Image 1: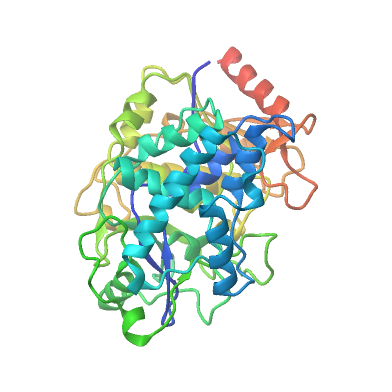
Image 2: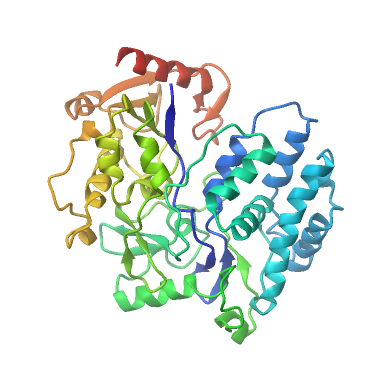
Amino acid sequence: MPIIRVLGGPSIGTIHHKMSDPAPLSTYYTEIIGDIRSRLIRLIPITSPRSPTEAIRGLLSHRLSVNHTEKTAREEWRDIVEGRSPLWRGIPLDRKETIRGFLVYFDNEVLRRAQKRFSFRNGSVGNYFLTAAHLFFRSVPSAIFLFSSITGSKAHILPALVTNHTVTIAAELEDNTKIVGQCEISHPVKRPTDTVPPSPDHLAREVGRKLKGFTLGSDDDETEDEGEQTGRREKNLDFAKEGEASGIQMLHSRIRRVLYINQFGQEVFPRPNPEFINTLATRDVLVYSVGSLWTSIIPCLALRGVASAIARSPGLRAKILLLNAHNDRETGGYSAVDYVQAIVRTLNSYDVVSTTAAAGVSASAGYPVSAFITHIVYLHGTGIGVDELALTALGVECVCVQRVGTPVLGRSRDKQLFYEAEEIREALRRIVRDG
């Protein structure tokens, strides 16, 4: 049963400088990496605690502390790069030197831009490894292949978007305010305000600050940036996810849409990875996986041609939404119907780029709900309202699963509600069999 699972996000294809908040405090952030690295880590096969695979998982999952000084973070990074860190224990020499070689490559790229004053606080070793591989091969798929080969992962991960242009996402709220950047939308640190005024000039200036400067692999290394001129030390992106920090507030207004923007704050319509589109025609099942709806799932769908590829696929027998167990900052108050409508509206709006696309309106009537979602799988006892009658009226079949087995999916930070591996497998088998 070949399955394609939508689990990524916008963190594909760009490496750029990013602001941590609207105040004059900037960060360097390798946005190619975040979602891809976390998914690759999760797909590393589970082995014995003392195995080389687990040692590699520990290294590539390691994040330098944000609570220590910059000097301490740099000392820890130096121990890793030079092979002295305890994190290397248990990793075979061949794989150690391969990984270390790319970390050295990343370190050299940082040194070439010493005037940018890169900070290693809160930095991820896995992010740095993937960034170096992407720079070396000039290919996101090649970087993913290297990571999978070293870790023994059998998964086939396809970026939905592959581009060398600098792009990021922004959320347009129903009250017409805008939020720029994935982490700003989904899990920002505390700040005076969560939104950016929608003025085009203000937005362009804000995005310019967020995307300016530290672009690994660019040719403008000698250009001074704002941080150098003021003597500020640049920081890695600080963020706080649910369960990791308190005080994360729900958005004051619902998200109307998510859009891609360039370094000038202008909306752009990037084309999806052709291999991603081709794969949609050859798989039996499409799963919209658990995760942040607006910053992980929808950016993979807000691309030209994705809607038609899903709706017209000759191979897809089932198109399944795996509903989260709880709502998060992006989806406060959402019901299952709201999730379905957000996905369908996005796909229809971006399938054909027109003069009305920027307003989130499709140039045509669009496809029906059932062209994109045929089933919704949800947990018994979910915190999200599931109106089975309303969903059935939309052409979506509801499948409720219990909690038995080993937890591997879903949001389990509350230690109470999560998806179980065997129950998900059985639900998928049942859907395909009955379909």
